[in-house]
Each structure stands twice: as structure tokens, then as C-alpha cells.
Image (cartoon, rainbow, N blue to C red; front, side, top):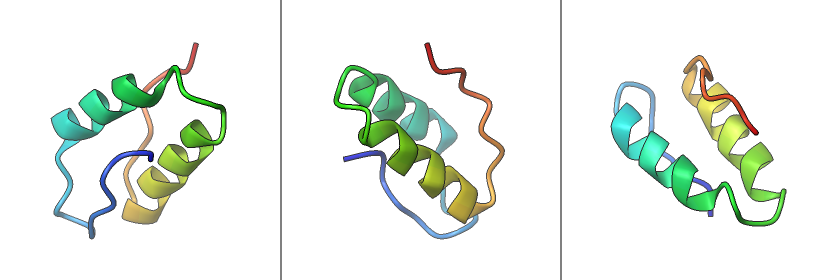
Length: 50
């Protein structure tokens, strides 16, 4: 589903981007879940949705 959920400091930004790119063409529910994961980790979302 939307990227791997990990604790703060345990995130792999490159891995997240790869996962994000993998799910962008899936139903819209995936993207909000992914953004929530970013917020929960305290990361700043910089990926622009098209």
C-alpha cells in the first residue's frame, strides 16, 4: 500500500520515492495514505503530485 511505514530516523528517502513512484497510478486512496506516513514520520513532503 503506500510506502513502508517506519519510525522517525529509520526512513529511506530514496526507497520512499521509489515506492511513491510505484503507487502513483493506483487508486487515489494510496496517495493520502502515503502523505500521512510522511507527516507521521515528521518528514517534509517535497514530492509534487501530478
